[in-house]
Length: 71
Length: 548
Image 1 (tube, rainbow over the protein chains, first blue to last red):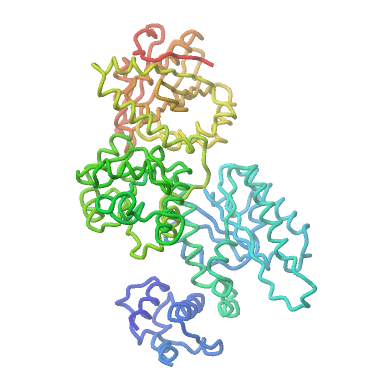
Image 2 (cartoon, each protein chain N blue to C red):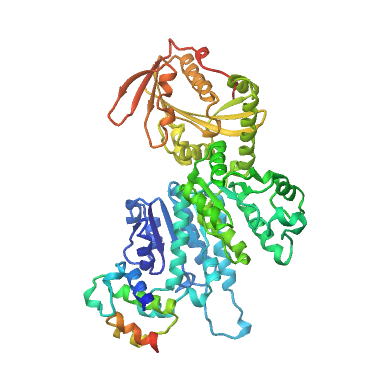
């Protein structure tokens, strides 16, 4: 989870402290469509998980990634 | 640095990463790289980049085009035109990777390798013909990472991005490294420890026969490491040893061990003693006259590394691999991080020799009765030539790199220099210096500019720090004064423009008897010398001057 937050901060160019599991796409202007797919790719590559193509648009907040990490 | 990344695919995400450190030109859309480079009025040229990276995706290049030579020839021609017409921009053009995933019978064969080769061969021909073009080795990056990891199908279908995040990170590093090289940020000297660094074990304990250094198995770790260091040295990086050891034990290994790849003459200096390493490094930097910030220190012992870091914060001290089977990779990493080299000049290949001669000169100086005796004993020869196509590469390099003895610090590229001396009223000279210890090569550049029939101006006057303190500059300026006096000029106007590093020559012209005409608040000084009253005999002279 720590790693997830770090990844988010890195891709979105924000402070780690400003991001929590409840952070949503609407809260953060930097989380645009390009960065959204970059985030998905980064999470997949670094945490070695797969997020199904069809589910990518459903990810609306940081915590949503956890569904795939836990599985 | 102002740079641009052009491509036939979407690289917005990569451009975003690069923008953290650089001023990067953003293209409208993608796939327009040919228009951008061919049209002299394109956004690219009005942006004015110093370096342009052209990253070509092979699949995309052939899309809708016939898979044969004509597509390649056409694109190579565009690139040649561009590189020729923009000599002051450095271009990096990628080779290509063709991942076809073609479904066809085995008999059908694959001509992709051939196309990849044709493209790369076309680029290499250009890179030999034009100094401002380099091949960007995309294909090797793809091979090192592996196609499955380099490309991302998901990113492609989601956002038209072809490369994975991992691939982007590597590309980012690679591009930044090229940018550093264009800026000339390369380090100059690598200082090496001996025990457990160049060989395994402690020679003082196990003796020459006991150390690990061989062609196979354990000892090959160190031999392979040495081989790579030798390759780095051959690119013009100087190597030195700083080791806590009994001199006799260590030098015996260096001279006699049959698996030592690095020989005594490969090192500019061997500081093998029990003094503090930081003190040895400080001495070395003074003896070689290079800054501490251009030194990289390699030692397996973390205590030594920490001590050098603390005493000499300017010195770069990378970690040392805990797993010594990584030594070969470590050497490659050192090369990439600190010594990455775009091109080598003839000077680079003999650099260690030049610095070794300088060390011998210092020894001669110590044994001379007076400094003047020492200078006379050097048997210096100064050869002055005009700048020409044959010597312009080194002349331009000197204007780029010389910081201390540089009165106006004007930086010129080769093309600018050639254009300048072609202009009416400009003349350019270079000086070569040799002495009984060896050849220093080209060490000085002088450019003059005619102002009026009676007034000549000094546009550039610089001297390499290698030969500072030998009054060579006085003989060169004496030659210039004399030359224009005899051509009928009455006045020589010169300048001192202060920079962070050229304080050593702040009062150079005052010492030579020039009158200060003007000083502004920034410290820029303008001088004048009445040529009718000057005499070449008033200039100090320790060498023999030859005009060619």
